[in-house]
Image (cartoon, rainbow, N blue to C red; front, side, top):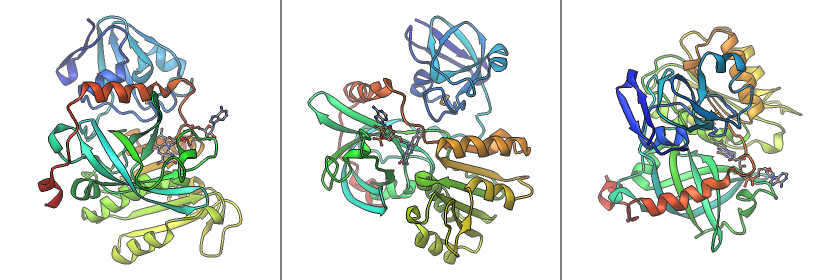
Length: 373
Ligand SMILES: Cc1cc2nc3c(=O)[nH]c(=O)nc-3n(C[C@H](O)[C@H](O)[C@H](O)COP(=O)(O)OP(=O)(O)OC[C@H]3O[C@@H](n4cnc5c(N)ncnc54)[C@H](O)[C@@H]3O)c2cc1C
Ligand code: FES
């Protein structure tokens, strides 16, 4: 049985041979950064100080050969072959919430823009004896629907709602881009409609709001990246953040724009909040024109003391993160979730849902007392 030791964190963890390293670290709630879970974003890097792992299936840009030679590995692409010794990189004030297995019902489904849906879920059953579902703004979950007796479709989506909505109202909201051939999103409005049952697993991801940070906060979204950025911005403002909070909401065309009125309302309520809608093609008079990342980088001459949160298309997130690092913003102040589609064959996460449901406590009703506080 392989042992993972992390001396700097005082940890010795037992795993099974061939276990995926990231899965084991998440199981033990070790504060490791991660986002895509499939070797594309590079956020789950850690230093292998002893032992060996079997690592494959990652993009060269996520772990360049020079870093590999220095002993860095990607936890999400590493399988354990024996004992290993690790050092984690920069866990800053990363919060690890217990991973939960919930069952929720669709209580609202509305079209926010052509082919972008607002999906609202009410949590009906939870594990852990009815404890409320806790997450940090900016995190995501895996939503799964059953499409046949043995078929589950599972995909990652970020919460647009705030942790408070989940803790006190048992509600979660998502913004989902529908593609007609999307195995999950293609069901919106047909297989997934009012009353449908959806399994929710998570929370996941380390690109979440850092409540202790003092300094300007920039939230940059492309398309449905709007969802986690909205959750972060609302949480920051409602938590009493006093420094400037700026939301850049990027869309390709004017028809794709949504959420403007909600942001205008926040701007009326909070003096330290402002937003720009940035449209790439044919921007209207009230909107900024261009690519959302370029507008941010043109507007802000000095990012000293700031944190930048980014979500949405991998192209935008990767390019803007790289420019921010080049401009001297420390990696610990860039929090990015690129919305990668799952690699073919990786939907075995659906099997993980079944396994988890079998392994875990019986599901119970959320505690009414907790919900009514
Ligand atoms: C951390 C994270 C958070 C995310 N948050 C969100 C979010 O809040 N909102 C959101 O909208 N997305 C989000 N995503 C992205 C979302 O998980 C993916 O886009 C996912 O693939 C959507 O599932 P789907 O059912 O639409 O498409 P999938 O079935 O996964 O298909 C992916 C794409 O491939 C195409 N496709 C499918 N089959 C084929 C085929 N055989 N040949 C060619 N093309 C094919 C589909 O048309 C689709 O465009 C997130 C992703 C990550 C990693
Ligand atoms: S590369 Fe491992 S989480 Fe993205």
